[in-house]
Length: 273
Image 1 (cartoon, rainbow, N blue to C red):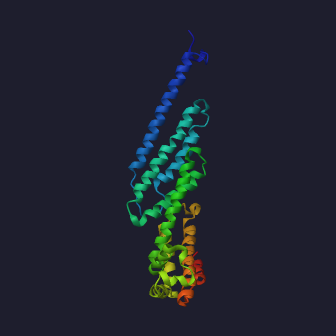
Image 2: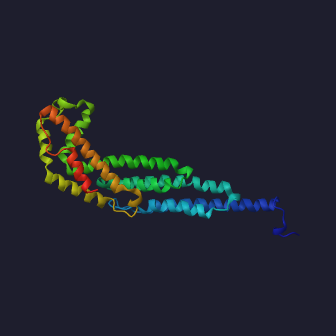
Image 3: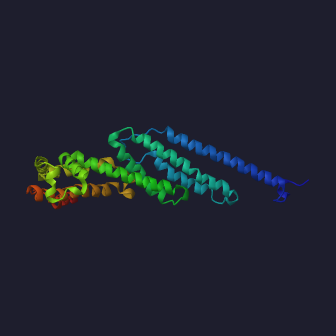
């Protein structure tokens, strides 16, 4: 009687052995995926944390580990393919977990999304895993939406009168041009903004903005994400665009000249870049 090593590769014995190995491997994979999802959902998140949260740090490392483990497993191609397709399940749970974590604090909702979706976009995007491309795209979109909200919040926090006026100007859209400003915004409101924009106050507010921004995104991954520098540029652009629009409309409608215009404010922001 022949031993297992002497049996031809095409025999029922070898086929059965191969199928048993495949079945056991698949069962282990399913268990592994379930364990990862359970671990993600067991993690407690601090919405105030300035760093990338642990489940998001771990996810791209997990992909790299599985890639390394499956090298040379061509005979199990279908199983290996299913492993990577199951990463979509983990990514779905990861995004849902972050959504719940972000709801812990309205104040930090956008900050936590910017940090973690930004990290996902860069780290997972660089791995070029086909099954995760839609997740990378979704992370990018959610980061951009959160950034817009965060920038508007930062501006409104330090420049409440200017921000309120900008919201009204945005509300009427292209209607506010030149002398038309008086139809929608009172002279008193324009003067309130002018009083808010003295040099000393502006310098102090811009300095505070920069400090708060650095505090919110104090992460070892910021060198790659560049959240501080990119967000600072967007805050500067937002403030300067409001001022430029207001400067032109206030002069034409009320003959009011802003003592400190967009160009001066831009220079103030650049000092803190």
